[in-house]
Image (cartoon, rainbow, N blue to C red; front, side, top):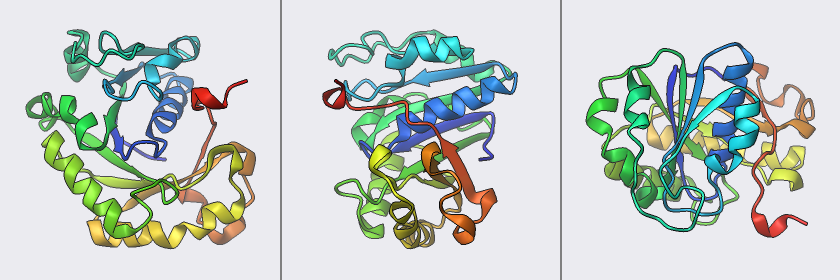
Length: 224
């Protein structure tokens, strides 16, 4: 999936943006790129990219996170290192918080970010509550853009059910993604398919539109 060197990942709570952020960062690092993942989620204690710090560093990804990012204390303690990545060469993936509340911190950087050549990818998932229709999903996008003071540049269709996904799960959500794209006036940058379903959708989705992702992020209540 093509994206710019400075890429912001935003979306509804639980849409899978953190898992996508981790995949994009690991992919960039595997190509020899100097890669930094910035965790700006100070709201959700369950799905934070900084919780996967050991994995990311093992893969060659530097992680920058707010103080208390790996706790349930939600204070906007932003590391000065976040400012430095705006001037560095290499790939930067920003995992913004969910919904309008989660991207408020992103808004505090908007003046500096808007002058960069950036992508802001809006991750959508038909199977998440409050984003099951194009109308709901576009309304959420408007709230995110308003709170972040930034505009999305493309959509990523991440409509799957993690390890419970089937080929039909992916294919049944394709019309939804196209409806969101048309209503928002944004292109679909890619359709995410869990790696265990690679090759299962055949020619029904163009190969260039597919992004194969590993499932790294799991809710803690599913772990045994």
